[in-house]
Amino acid sequence: MTETEQAKILIIDDEESIRNSLAAVLEEKGYLVDMAENGQVAIEKSKTKAYNLALIDIRLPDMEGTDLLTAIKENTPDMVGSLSPDTRHFRTPLKPSTRVRTAT
Image 1 (cartoon, rainbow, N blue to C red):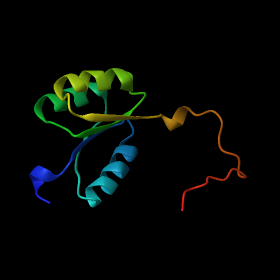
Image 2: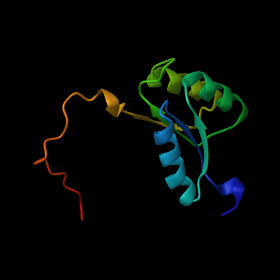
Image 3: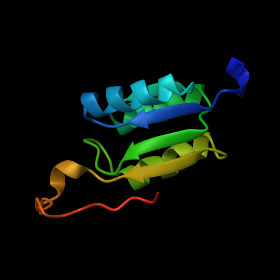
Image 4: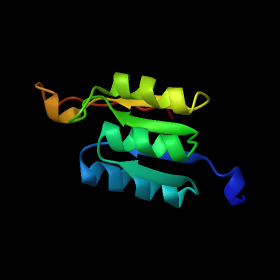
């Protein structure tokens, strides 16, 4: 796959460890990855680069993820956005007996 065929993904999260973990997995799969630590940086990057996908933390320090998605889509209308919850704000942890089922 050539560089022009590779999907370009923008990861926006205020937690550096989450950005780096997602980037490592996606780059290993052959995607071109860019990162931003807040909404304003993401908006500036979207003005100069076209992304195929944005993975956006729903709660950022400077704006809500939904507002950021709207702003980025103005610069890159064909981009797909995916909002992810800020897991630091979950108040009910999973009980040890909770089992997660996966399709086989």
